[in-house]
Image 1 (cartoon, helix red, strand yellow):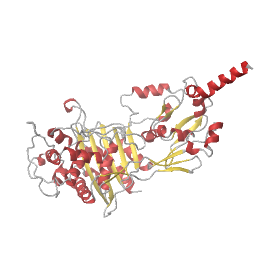
Image 2 (tube, helix red, strand yellow):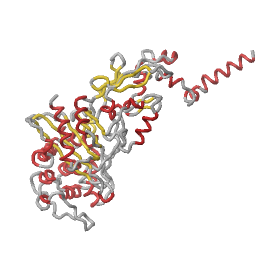
Image 3 (cartoon, helix red, strand yellow):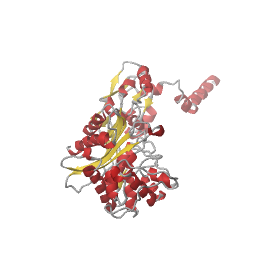
Image 4 (tube, helix red, strand yellow):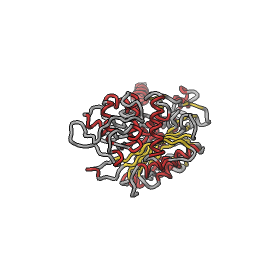
Length: 471
């Protein structure tokens, strides 16, 4: 009887009081075996872009990817050795069937340890738009983020160079993993979400919006009063322009945007003031460390403490200003959607394996950056950049296109290859509806001789926007 009591106490101690410790013990493979005992649910972009295949081994199923490099920036990877990232990681419980929302009888399933079939994640990605983005980037290092301005739905999220997540999905793929980790081009870096770059002159859209919203400028065609040359406050350094046409006094905001005049836009940033510039930048997602789409984006930066000369440089997208392509797409989308900046949304809905809806994601307002009147003026500025200025390569026949180029210097003494940017929106000519697409493109490294936003990034944005307009 004593031995029976001792056994009962020991069994209770192990199964009740030590349960959590044993479940989480690295030597306990039961949870891992159970995780891969059935096919994983799918990520869907129009159609499933993932799958599962039987291994014949102890871990019964491994992840597969259809057009893996095309969608890697969206899906992330699911590896039997290295875990899960991005959508594969955020929705791992749903995809593996352990999410309680999949259970019909949650308590009974918990008692019996019954595992439901994995659910599916339906993304907002448009396959044709995603393909246009990846083809446009080609062999260059860069990224594209395309958004539907009225809803915040992400139509494309592309990063190059890319990789095949399926190459590291199994238990025997260590060599492929090590090769990817050692690659100096960092193919596993999600440049659309997880890398920030100085936005250069594309940030002038934010500066123009702040100047207009706060009354620094009331008429985009009237002289701004910006001096030339413009000496950075507290210094003897002149803020130079890239084109001689900017080297004059009396330029309007429209002239300054069309020709991308640093002196005028830097001066306007200082006249608008630090607090107002910071507030406008935050309206578009700058300084937000928890921008989840639901994958978390890197924090885009606009300094909140600067002197006047630093503010002037920040107002033209230099100094410490840095942004993800996602946030710069939000800038273009906010101008397109009458000042409403919608929360970017990569997932449309979650479903059970049989298609029954588990959760529907609804459009959510992120910030009202400015009113419709200011938005109309900002759009006019951006249209003039494309029609008459540096963004001519983004022109689309039969469409109204507004954009802004940017060429951001970087490296020690600006010796690095410049970052080429373009942000834009487009809609059918004559339409007054909210444009169906806004896009940001950055080329971080290219062997092209013309490394400018207008030369490299604008044609890619054009292709992406044209794809949406032709749907």
